[in-house]
Figure 1: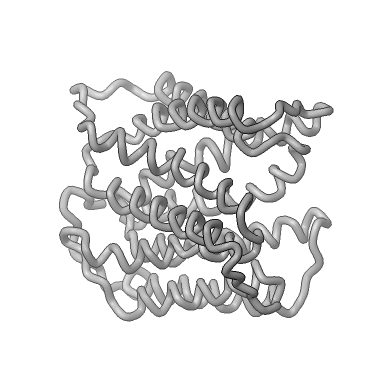
Figure 2: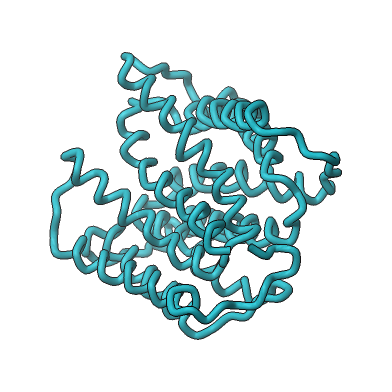
Length: 297
């Protein structure tokens, strides 16, 4: 279980590169960027299928798994882009980033799971640290005029937490199925691009490399790693630790000169790290949780 949790957290680490690589990719519209990067992410899955031995028996994928996967990947991005078009980015991002907390709380409804106080406390500390990151240390200003955008951001949080939790109910479904989730997301994003956006191509090799990096990691390998984590890892720990993504993203921007260090970064680091350690108390201090249904180490 610990190994799968670490693999799941590697997805969080890769998502930390999302802001840097998106900024470096130029001014490509979001659905066009999504279509291209998810196509690259599909290639990541196809390459992995070629490099790994074929399973002894073919697993039949239930229809609901296809619905969960496509709604999770495409639905999250569709509603997130819609939220950003209809609400200020700071407030919309914070609402959308309720999904780790929803994963921790929702895990109590999963078969064989037990939600402890330190899971909730760790997720709330992470949320507090995220607040410091996304608000630049300032106050939120929720305006009723942007109610539609806020609602779309809330749908994002519900969709991604639901995708993560429901994926855990199908531990026998191989992670290779994520390949086709990425392919469907790429195709649907292309349709949205053609209907809603004007095409803008990268202007130089650096921007193309950033697009390639997005498809290989944050919009590629990360989704395969996340699938392993939510199916076989400690989902409460993984949910609380996911609040490290905005912190790691900010630290990456600081390293590359796109942001300045400050007291709020230090405070966020303490809150998010403390929250993750608290949520992982049972793993770190030797109290082994009971095996989950079909999702043991």
